[in-house]
Amino acid sequence: MSVTKKIDWSALRKDFPILDQKVHGKPLIYFDNAATSQKPRAVIDALVHYYERDNANVHRGIHELSNRATAGYEAARARAAKFINAKTVEEIIFTRGTTEGINLVASSWGAKNLKSGDVILLTEMEHHSNLVPWQLLAQRTGAKIAYVPVTGDEGLLDLSKPDSLLTKQVKIFSMVHISNSLGTVNPVAELCARARKLGIVTLVDGAQSAGHCPVDVQAIGCDFFAFSGHKICGPTGIGVLWGRQELLNAMPPYQGGGEMILSVAYQKTEFKPAPHRFEAGTPDISGPIGLHAAMDYLDAIGRENIWKHDQELANYAYEKLAALKNVRLFGPKPAVARASRPSASDLHHTGKMPVPLPGRAGLVSFLLKDVHAHDVVTLADQAGVALRGGHHCTQPLMHKLGVESTARASFYFYNTQAEVDRFVDVVKEIQKFFGQ
Ligand SMILES: Cc1ncc(COP(=O)(O)O)c(C=O)c1O
Image (cartoon, rainbow, N blue to C red; front, side):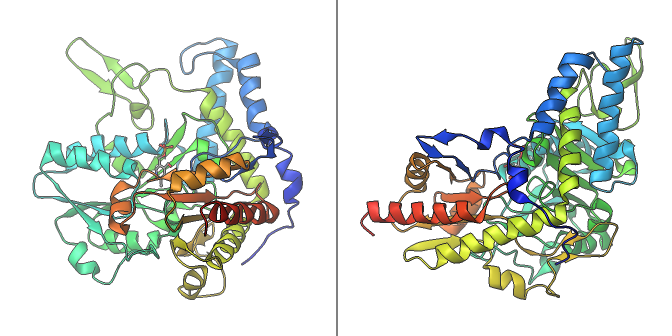
């Protein structure tokens, strides 16, 4: 693991005003970062500054405020391109989040390129947002959906029979980079390379990866990559869809309206090229501006450092929970994850940015014997610990694992080992409460 600089993690924590509070009389421990992250002062200030000084509509006015708003909006696009090493700025489309990015591809690319008998390949660990849009598309086109199986509780993709999955009927392979339910880091670069050889288009759901590790879409070798601002310290309601320019420009618009046209007549419209053809109507303007501040903030820390910190906390939490009786853990064991790596390093330095190797990311999903996940979360909340309990929008995966739900602790760089110790003590108290 290469660590580029020494970080004062506790100083960074002070950048997050929300963390400094008590919940039910106990200091807040926020372990629901996979659902949404907290926002640093720099992001809050960028939003306030925009609304206090620059607010106007973009790409329309010729007045000063509109020029400033447009400059801020387009600067955020350039920043997003750099954040994921896109080849060109035009490959960045602003969306409402990962969900909308995937829906855009399914609706636009899918409607043009899929027909009855074609296959959409997904994995069994997909979030509903990388599942339902494809089901809707399959219903519309007559295409079928196939799934790469998950091995079981350890939550790895079973890639033992790639040839039976990557058939010539497969037209698109859409896969999650990091599973929000299991913490599995999938070998997306390898999967995209295999798909590419067969001419299969690939989409990577980067909701859980973009803010936690370096992401280089060119090194991953995918065709589309989607992520959400709110999970990477940015505002809610803004996200990014990256796509290869040649694919984007061959796709029909997703929605029609203002901003996305070159000319309109009563019977016919000519559309702008990407990205504007996919951004109909007045966009979220403050969102990209807040997201810009978030990307600057994260990269000032260094996503390599964030990745190392997240993983250390998750591995520590996993080992501590594994040492307790009557705890069922999901996702790759830290030792298994480490053994599957070709080197001791967690990041693989190939392209412009290092990419995380397959393994375990910064979250732990678990169940206590005979205790419903919602009871774990409710009791943890009383102790000031914010967890998530439920199916995590991966209902088919839960069915496959034979459970209804799990409890999940998900970490970010502002979390500390002392918080993990407190969380594990709370888990022990819950077990005691249930007579275990
Ligand atoms: C893996 C994964 N994909 C997609 C999503 C959807 O993200 P959003 O709700 O921000 O669109 C999430 C959200 O939890 C996720 O964890």
